[in-house]
Length: 160
Length: 249
Image (cartoon, rainbow over all chains, first blue to last red; front, top):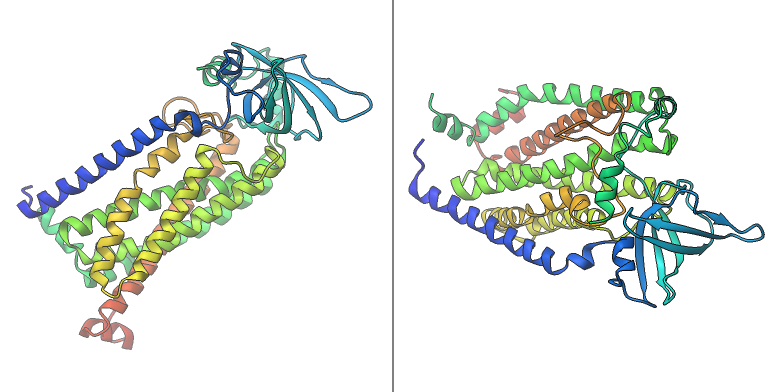
């Protein structure tokens, strides 16, 4: 399968363009890596890597048993965690339907000097698990949280 | 017949017109059957999701539109590269034919994603890596469409579009792995090439149907557009006049 030399050269030029563009994109992605991330994980916030008194986003799982709702208003307090660190969040407003303990959320707001995150928006972060309710119920009955729910994977994902 | 002879035969618009005419029903019929059947199956017969309820059903349109929009881009970039290397006019016509279909599918992916995002996440739009990179894909398609129109000279248009298509191809792996590389709101893929998929098989089967149907739909639309382009560009030739007057096929 000999190729015409001129065509071979053009093929090489195209491959070179691809490599060069990929390298440029990789460098750009590397330079902007912090900005491309949509949110800070709790580990980074606790470690002081997130700016204070500036609008940022934080993301993690809502800690089991941490949700406290006010009885006379829409105020709610909960903790988010990446299984490494925990950040307390305060929010007043309507929560998305999928908000629940043990589920992922992305909150935007301001991190105070006292380490409490005052959220102005709470978004539910849906995971990649899809199953019918009966399957989920059967899995719960069997004692596994879910064959699909890989807690280790999630911990790894949220807390690099 | 050697590989290269076969390859060069593909460069003949007349041969491609006749071949694609025979091929088209094999794409059109599965496209219609799999898409309509898969939608009916996914919308009416599959159980609801344990968390999202019925809103998850938009997956049967969203995932095929997104995946095929990316596949279409790779097809367009490959056709562009073939045109640049072998100066094959047919490849330029295929490249031109993919762009409007890809743009429409990308728009559909963004639209269905927004419609699903509101009840699930609580917002229509967020500037995370996945959504932003898909928006860039949409702009790339629009750029190719605009660039095609910007040139009087067909050959110059094809070259410019091919280079833009190839350069933009770097965005495709970024879209695919954006949810792995960066913290994003969009979830990672449920259909996995390695390991077990995280979508229950009863929900996966209609998704495979609409996904396959969407690929057939892309092929069908690209053939239709390419055949149109062939007839237009070769309109002064004997064989096209014969086709149009019904003297031959």
